[in-house]
Length: 274
Image (cartoon, rainbow, N blue to C red; front, side, top):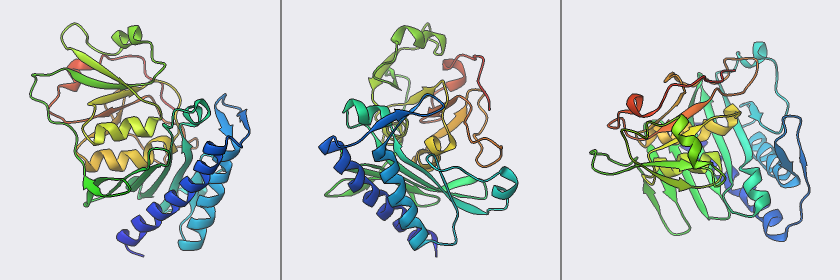
């Protein structure tokens, strides 16, 4: 199956899972609990995972799957894979529970250690973002699809920073050079949707300090790169996929155009690396 067909599989599967998620969201008919890592999970996450696993097993039975909601094999086994699906059945479960609508189904295809396809479907917003290596990044709604790009920058405007709705703005001075640069803050839920707003030019950067898994970045990593941006760790090094026994990311940054002097803007800090 070629890349175009695999992209179609990912989009179709994400939208089918989104229908299931929307049913639970609109009816309020779901249960929630805290996982061992103190992050929330709901019956809607598990229902979305079931749909994704069923669809991908049916359509691409020879491609293995890593999902946030399913235990994975040891690295020694996973290292044998030349490609695999990487899933987050609901990115932004906390936003799902709070009722903000800022949550999404994430699917990435990782090939030779790098995301080559990314799909992010936000069912409540009726939006789908997708990217494919050498194809570009796109935003689709019910009526149209358009190619998206990170915002241009000529030094004459404030730098737009995507943040959590619960972000303490006073803490941003720990990470950003607020003495020499001016910033505008844009509050949004869901890690992947923050990345997508950068990919479409609505913000310039997002700093994620705290635990995330490779499933949180895989899909948006492809999209943001195809739109002209990057995702790197807090030491300005590339993220990696399927290279460690654990699947947790280090602290990372999603950055828009390289015309912005990021190394002058982002302060060095003691990064958490897994």
